[in-house]
Length: 366
Length: 260
Image (cartoon, rainbow over all chains, first blue to last red; front, side, top):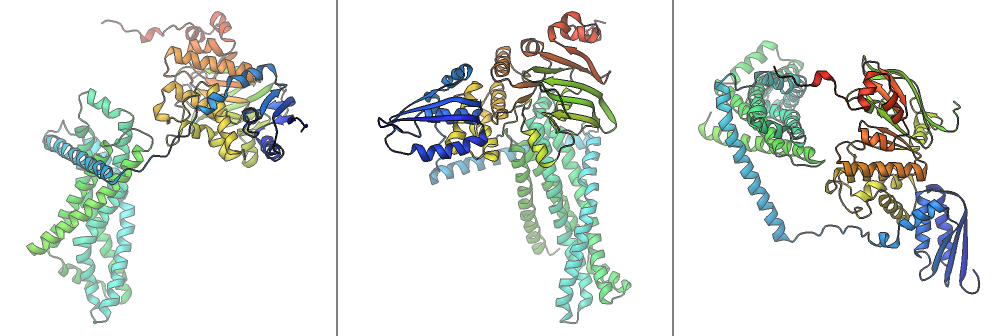
């Protein structure tokens, strides 16, 4: 730096994203010297100047490293000079990073939540109305129901779920048998493990586990499928062709759900009982005794409760999956959000429905 | 493999397809440095698949794709990354990340691959955005941009690391003629002033005549390249009836509606 506050910087070679980092560090150290009034940046020795080099020169030129100094960049190639002048200080100053969204006051938040809840309720009523209007005529009129679609969904949601239902139910039978065997042994009543497993699987765990698996596998799949169709405007296409998305997409899925859930539940109960029986065989009980205990422990009423539950759970899972799919909004994360909502809402409603069933059956003593 | 210096991309005996189905068989072509090279063909004949293979997204059935001296088909690890740094890609829909604003989208490669100080990163992005005519849109979210603006932002993101090659998939698709002409101007300007090589997949005739230095035309039936050359020369002198119809925008007679 000269005595009159004049400083000169000479840059040479390649100004790429890699070399600029080092260049920046060295310039920052040397230009921090107080009192630079005029800075001249000579780039006549630069062989390549990429975006990062351009940014460095512009940054120097705007005086950001030498506040108050007059900075000039000399030796720029002609074409580059034009480009350099094309991006001005005003362009830089016009950019203001977006401020983070302010948090809303409590009342506003409550208002938003209430409005969303009311909208959700209206949507639900809309959906249920549409379903009530479309489901019975479709069941009665053969031409209105898309049976091939029902078969396809039934295969995806029902038949394809058999392996996972088998594994989970078998292990559930194992778990219940081992846990109850330990406690019942204290009373010398291990034989009643068979009764426990049968009653628990038939009345509660069979329908519940099947419904949970269906919620994870099928409610999410329905929501994602219908949601993607909505994002791709396929639902609009259906509407303009005069076809109701509820009749066309939702009804076949609900019918498939109604058929699949009880069948899968029966299967789940059977697998749970097999799991329990295996544990009991291991404990030394004879197969005939186990089967006898299992047969006498359930009444027809227990089976009816289990089947009723599974039917309701099937409707909940497929209905909620479709409903959340239809609610999908625009945007890249919309389908993901619908899928999550479908699973969470179905699980919540399954548990609520189960609690209602338990209360009702307790008072009805069935 | 030694190529002449002015060849940046060399496609050798490339066969692509899905499973048993072969779309293109043993095709060969080269792209020269600084030229605007357009891949043409009717819808569904494998233009975009060819481009995906050239940029390493779609493994070919056989053959090689050499970019700046490296075979992208065989390269792995660091070598693959080195080849990938030579080019940027603009996808048909723009493929901007919806959860980030335009500046963050453009800045992402700088954040991931460079040690540049924050103010310089910001300046690089703003300069690139100004270059593509989006100076005032840095703070906007992709959903707030029109189709043409999204494509421009995607071009800015593709060129933020100063690649020598830009691949553009259908840059004019779905745009009005004015916006489309704006993209053409941008492409020509970037090629002329910065020496960027462009590989463009397109079937927009107006756009092809405006920007292309050289085109190749691929065909489903032939499973290969049926024409290569300057667009004007192909329009005026093509002997292949399909190429002639394409460049002169003549419909296939079987598509006409006949009253019964």
